[in-house]
Structure formats: C-alpha cells, structure tokens
Amino acid sequence: MNNPNARWWEGALRGTPLQVKDGRTYFTDVPADVAVDTQGKAPQSSWSNMRQHHYQWLKKMLRAVPNNSRIVDVGCGPGQFTDLIENHDCCGIDFYPYQNVNLVADISKTIPLKDNSADIAILSNVLEHVYDFQILLREVHRVLRPGGSILIVVPFMIKLHQLPYDFFRYTCHALERIGAEAGFSDIQVDALGNFFDVWDIDQRIRTRIILREATGWRRFMARMLMWAERKSDFILHKLLPSSVIEAPDADGFPQSYGMIGRKS
Image (cartoon, rainbow, N blue to C red; front, top):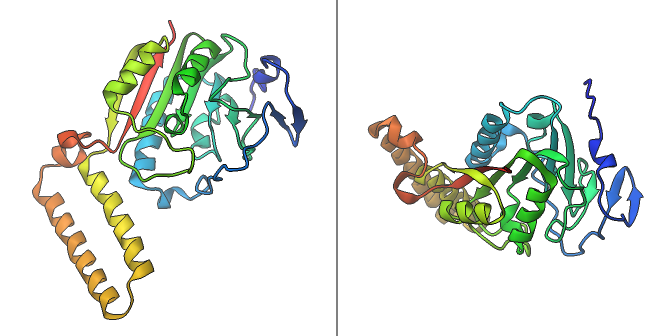
C-alpha cells in the first residue's frame, strides 16, 4: 500500500517514553491484573450479533473518510476490525502490547500524541472500561485536528467482561452529554440492535450453562426445551413485520450504541 503518511505518529509523540521494545513505544508498564482479550482474531462467522452491529456501523461511518487519513485507534485491543482501517495510517494504542499496538499507554490518564495530530479517533468497546472517561474524551478532543471525528461503539446489554476493568453502561442521553462536555459538536448517537438481539445473548448464555452444568436426562430435557424455544422464536420472527425485527432500540431495549462527534 502506497501511504505517504506512513507511521505519522512517530513524529507526533508527546512525552518521554519508558522504552522502545519489539517495535512498540511504551509510556507505561503493563498492568499485572489486565485480562487479555483473546477474542480479537475469532473468524467473522463466529462473531456475536453485537460485534456484527458494531462492525457494520463503523464500516458505514468510515466510508466517507478519505484514504490515508491519520487514525488513532484508542484502546485498540487485538484488532477485531483492522480490515476497516487498512487503507489508512493507523496508530494503535492500548495498555497491553497486542500485535497491532504501536503505543503502550494508560489512556485513562493521557494519550501520548501532540495536539491536532489525528483525523479520526476510534473507541471500539473501550469507553465502558475507563473509569475516568472524561479525561479520555478530553484527550481525544485535544489530539484530533479541527474538523476531525470521534467514532465510539459501546455495549449496553452485555455481561461483565475484561474484569476488573468494566465500569459503565451508557445510554444515548449519557453519550450525548459526555461528548458535548468534552467539547464535541454535531453529535449523533445511533441505537444498534433491539430486544431480539438481547434475547440472542440470553439464549447463548443459557445454552453454555446447560452444556456445562446439566447431565443425563436433565441435560437432554433442557436441550429439547431450548430447541423448542428457538423454534418459537423463529416463528415469532415470521409473524412480526420485518420493520419491527430489524428496527433498532425496539421498545427501549437497544443492544448497544454508536456515537459520532466532531471537533469544531
């Protein structure tokens, strides 16, 4: 790929790193209690419907972004959606040195990049894991160029995960407010998924519990009841209009949210 901005962040570093190791620049030590995300390289065919919703929303938002834009992937983790940004010059930041991480830093305190240095900031399933989220959002605002955009996806209906770093669930009203307080304008929040997606999560959890805990005839009967339940759900989908099945946030049960905001 011919990218004239390649490795733009090397000239935009802010602060003194602790060390450079294995191609990564460290601004913090790796926390000993971090739960390593092992799901990042799972094939798309095995993704949950929540991950599918997040992928499609980010894909839609990134279509309008010119190639070779400077993107900072904040809290990038193992890089579930790297194909969405392969035509851009991306700087991955996380406090664990995953394969696609360029800067190892504590994003709850600072982003080690200069002011007005990036075009786009992506926070994919990150905001719920940062206790001092306003510090993070103000840092993202500082790093973005005027006219730059922040893209956020967060879960709403999801189990506790990445413990002990799981702190919040955000409503659409909370996202609008905290985004504005951090200095962003033209904020748009989209509900992603509805109660059918939430029901899918419930089915997955109960299926795992049954396979793990039940034995003998109890396991057989439980599996039969789950089969009947899935058939009932399939028929319900056929009876209801597709506009209800596919509409996000049906009756106040969004599965997750996507938010875009701009720096004036």
